[in-house]
Length: 273
Image (cartoon, rainbow, N blue to C red; front, side, top):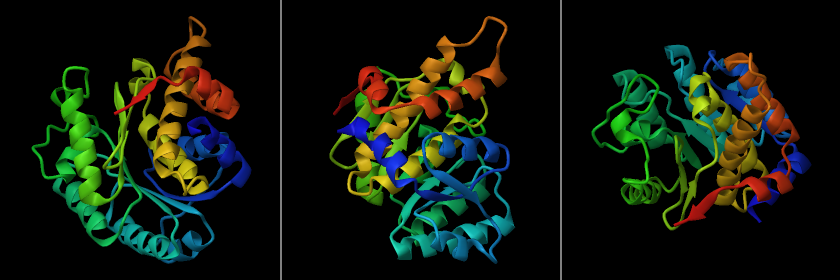
């Protein structure tokens, strides 16, 4: 069952290596802890292979890219792939600059990732389609909606087939797809977009869910996405009238820490296409 994936995370307690951006690194670590896994952050090329060896998953996020970390990502990615670890790429801002697009594309050429998670503009840029990126955010014309849902589901499945990876497109409507099935997920709150790093947090948590549920990768990624969306809903319900973005961020992490299979079962809002 999909909701059982969170039980497995808390039972297995996987160690997740994160090469992630320094804007959200603390929140990524806290979300991974909240869902029942453990984080480790290391991005120096002199140690990333060694660190990766002791982990069960690797989350690569290119949000604050630089020449030093690019090599670290390649080294850690190749080591994790050789060891059969869960591998996730978050191509933050792909399409916004040549460096980001080239780096993400090179990583995909050299390393097979189990999951590619990003917004639709980033993934379209990597797929060679016309990009409309607005920095690290999806352009309004690209956002998944009920009107373009069939087209976006088709894109997700086709890109999953091309990459042989699970494609997780997050936004107002989330899509989590392999080449045969797509979870269309409608959990979450629009206010989550006003917090820096909810996508980065999801990538870290999704890698943890995947590492603990390697036999059910699509369900694991869908469950992680639902967990984040539900946490946003629950956190919003508990905000006091005077509380804003900072409190909302903390309450999302609290909601993830208290999340269980029954809450997911009762609150999940999705269909499979």
